[in-house]
Length: 240
Image (cartoon, rainbow, N blue to C red; front, side):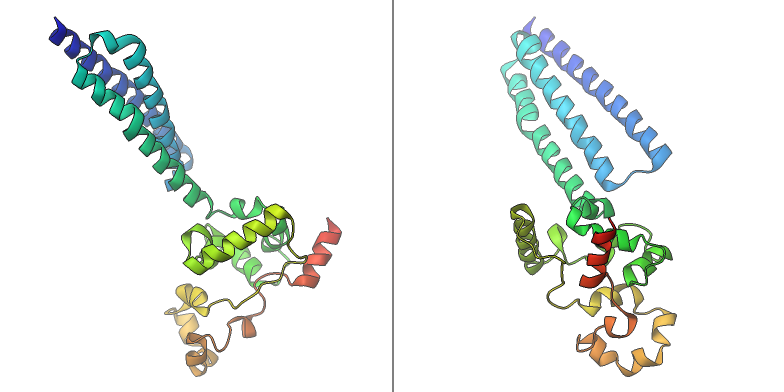
């Protein structure tokens, strides 16, 4: 009788998981068909499914199935509900965080970035960021495409700077207007432009290639600023 009850409990458990998987698949499928699905959205759905499944498993095991489960089955279900599924949730949350920080909306969530985001979306702005955005030269994640060395995706130095910026933000001790310290590496520009016919045919690029490659000469020296300078930020703040 105990073996029969154990098999029945496992069958019910598989049925519940199948129903959850079917409903989750329908939800993700509908989202994909209507809007497309990014890695962040996918992992958000996986994390949500894992959370629901984990809570359901623990509830069923502890309050409904425990008297009828074999000790080994009981331990395995607890292992799934208390360890495997929470790990899946953590992976889903982490992936979602990493993917969301690539979006323009993530940058715009800090109001100190408003002058830069607003300028990028300004159809009249002459900055490089606005020009790239206006001409749709970067299809998505426009901020991250040029700042790939920054934040959680970047180098150790970038994480150090990111922590410093976070500290200045939460303590409200940053200086206004914001000014960029350091130098922007030409390799970020070259990652997209190098190798294209339009880039390679420019005589000045050919003549100054060694200086551009070693960052002795900045791309901004000829192509102008990527974002509004201190004076433009003050004007933008005064207009708001």
